[in-house]
Length: 178
Image 1 (tube, rainbow, N blue to C red):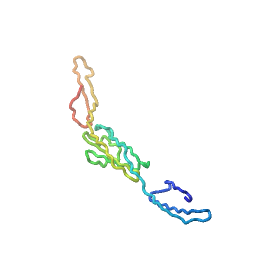
Image 2 (cartoon, rainbow, N blue to C red):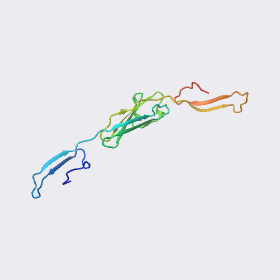
Image 3 (tube, rainbow, N blue to C red):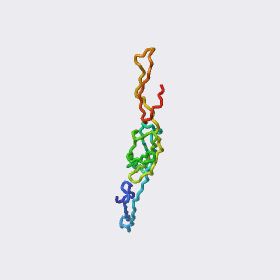
Image 4 (cartoon, rainbow, N blue to C red):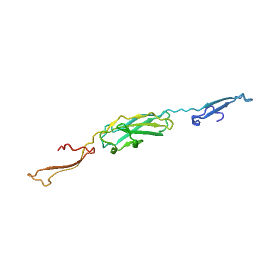
């Protein structure tokens, strides 16, 4: 890099020590050299989470919980890692760490789920950002089958409705509206 007045940042790295020596010349003789040294410091800003969403906003026990987040990095550094921690009823659930989705099979009516996230650009971590809690609500019962009979009904036949149903929360059948 002799005879250059500037050095692009593309040539420098953190902790480099750059030395320069300058000697003036009048074309006939060189004057005494002057020397300078500069240490390349560390310049990085931790990334930030600009958005964290946990959907759906009012989940029922048959809904998956879906995490989405957006981050920003002042230097434009790419996301290197994201740490995700899920909690149910205030207790950290290690088996779900770093998952973007919680399958409905792992939730139950009455659970209160939260998630917190932090991201890294490979140099610094953002602070933790937590979601608002999601209370898992009751899932409605499902009608599996029903019939009206008898099939060969006449004007003197007593008609009957038969049905089978399933409740994902295992709630007892209280009433059937016909």
